[in-house]
Image (cartoon, rainbow, N blue to C red; front, side):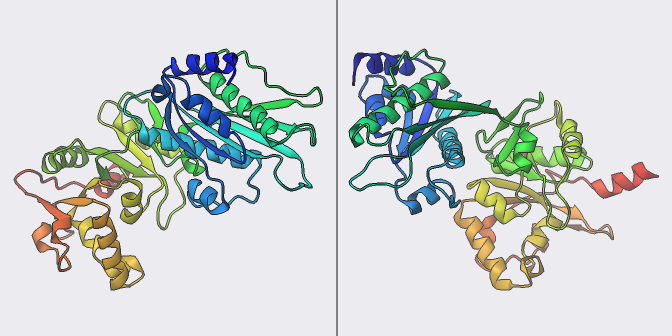
Amino acid sequence: MDTAITAAVARIHNTPEQAVLAVAGAGNYALAWLLGVGGASRTVLETRVPYGYPAMTDFLGGYAPEQTVAPDTARRMARAAWQRGLALRESDAPIVGVACTATIATDRAKRGDHRAFIATWDDAAVTIDAVTLEKGLRERAGEEDVVSRLVIAALARACNVDAELDLRLATSERVTTETIRHAHPMQRLLDGEARWVTVHPDGRMAVDAAAPLALLPGSFNPLHQGHTRLAAAAAGTLATPVAYELSVVNVDKPPLTIAEIRRRVDQFRGVGTVVLTRAETFRKKADLFPGCGFAIGWDTATRLIEPRYYGDSAAAMLTALAEMWALGCRFAVAGRADAAGAFHTLADINVPGGFHPLFVDIPEGKFRADVSSTALRERSGR
């Protein structure tokens, strides 16, 4: 490690950014350089080396890239690293996902180019550097050195550090750089690029922010006092604040449009936090937010244990309940009046044997609101 790299890494360590780095094929020197300068714990949250194809597929959340060394793979790796960083950070430090995928000289001749793609992902954009190395000019160690310098330079740029590094490129070699600004958070969710979007009461949005501890799912068309009062009651039962959750996709309807999402989200201004997801079933919600508590009504709890909502399979229903229980989730159930006006509670539900601890009752004395979104819509229509 020369003095310029040491100085650049030291300046990176003095910035607030924290990073997860994933390298495959090359870029390993960069990891050693970052960890070899004091202060690395302020910057490096984790390093990953998904070298084999199964390891790469696992790191990308099950996505199997057609080409491992490609700009799209670098982009996906950087996003996965960024998401990992969000899960690992212990403060509100800005997170950078850094990725490198490369093919360089080895112990056998390669027919294709020796090339590398380095990507950085942060809250605002993804930037991808690409370089093709002149074959035969260097041995493997020399190509590893060049690629690793590019990784340090990319991280420095993401941390707003002037690295002043000699990349040791030959006159025939050029680095091309492309920066792509992220789409609106709602669009990123609809495109499947974001796992969830948190909308704060003041309207601020965050992609894949801290996972909520408790949620009240609903369509909120419209939001009414029954929702807000249930959230307050469930917060007491679950001993944690309850946010609202709106899935932008539905089991049997088209996804919500951005205009419709905005309309429903606007109802929560000054009211509470709403989390937007693509999880239309409780099984998917549990996967997305393990350990989460869910506030639901008696009617929803009834559907939760009906086999017809699991392809008419009692086994599938029991499996789903067991999996949600294993994920640490639970359901706070509030009473609700049926169409005939009869009020029902958790005690009226035939919970399958052994699954009673998955459900907790919200007593009628703590919550009862005989109002429904459907009735309000019909009244509004008239």
